[in-house]
Length: 147
Figure (spheres, rainbow, N blue to C red):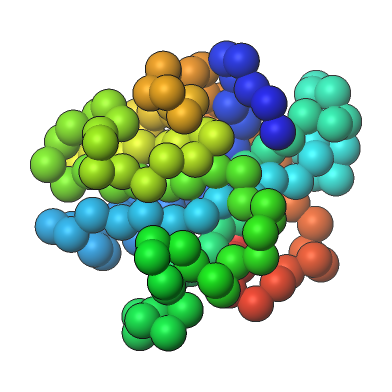
């Protein structure tokens, strides 16, 4: 998934991510995100059908010591996630050295509103973020993923 400036995400996913961040505050949160082609979504007809739209999140397990080795989470199949959500309860909007890097990163800060969410590429450059009122297909869920 290659992006220059535009990141698309569904309203439902944004709301879920912000709710998780608020629940974990004052702790930070890092969650893997995956995409669905716009052509598979209801409400994304204005986009090219191949445009990737973030629709799904990987809910981290509480007791992950067996699944996480040397910073790698082995419960997520390789190349199955194209982005990462990061919460910064300290109010830092930018990507930091402590963050888990990914191709695309969505960073949120308190008070956990849609306007408090920004998108960045792997090098920390801010990207355009569009929140879509689109609905992903109901099938295709894998263990640990949520919409």
